Length: 490
Figure 1 (cartoon, rainbow, N blue to C red):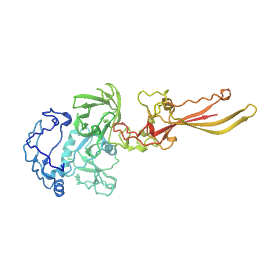
Figure 2: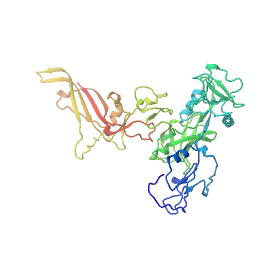
Figure 3: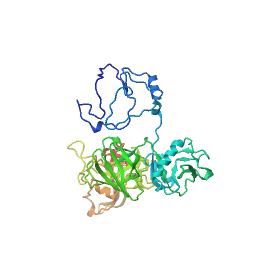
Figure 4: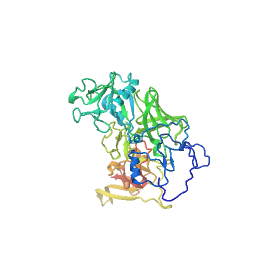
């Protein structure tokens, strides 16, 4: 931080991390608490030169502030905080973490498990890291089913015997078992040998199930959608660590999601000590990734205890649609008459209209100018004259009436560029207000409606993405589309 002018700086005060700083002797505040690592906090009485900033950023030196430095001043530690001494270059090293999923799966399925939480199959950097991975994997040996129990995230599919990591495509330092690799171009994937932790090459499509270690990557956080959080960071989760010998999801703001028994997962709020909800999964190896129906065990947002609420865990960004299985596709592929999600869920539940609470289909929309009627734009197209009788003074015609109006009470989602893409179903037609037409001068009241269709004509842009939306559908307000009713008579 740089202050462009001189300000008094009292240096005999005390800062207590986690305490309310805006009040004199303020109490501790959970919203201002800190969980993490602090290092090299410095204060200078001058601005730093670009060279000094560059030097610190490269971790070559660690200059101390001439006013304050945590490396020099006395800092009192409370609440179980600890101190670790490291060299300055430590802060420029990439920290590699991973979590092992202790269920035996084929290679393609194992890689999907990692990618759906934003991770990738892990590869040890060197022999030391490989030993650590092997030792940690032993706790899950019984669940991984075989002597070749763990997938390694490398392949030589591009160039034979040049093994590259899934994570960054860099060349890996391999840890082969004796007489390996021996599969030639037909074996481009890697397994770990349970007895000694060394590697053996194998086919990527072999029907050999094994467990998988996933390397943590925080660039695309796992997101929980379906609640009413005001801060987007409240939706962020990471998978790191184990509870009941299964990986669990840890939220940035105190929620954790973990397995409680064979088919049940629980969402727990560590800040209040309350169970938020439970989820019943279809198999013992299932995780709460993708869209699922949770049962609330405490009230959340406007939902009462016992509510069946759909929520989703995925890494999908705000410009992506969340498939039911947790995969992500661009929003423009939603409801386009093509199956883009592998589970076909992008073409399901393609509801175009969102009704507000209290909407009445028998009540017309109000004009924005109070006291004025709404504007309805009719067009009549005479298609053909089927009969003209001079004697009876009647004509029999076939015609099409098109009526356009706007209903600002509604919201719309996933609108296409043409009327045909935005055709409302019979159910949706009955849910919205639409004008009724009478023909008082029809001869003998004999008129036949051949068809009635209701469309949406997109005329505006979508609303900003709502990060709590379970599927991340594209939503439009009522002014962004015109309702178009087409009535075919004879």
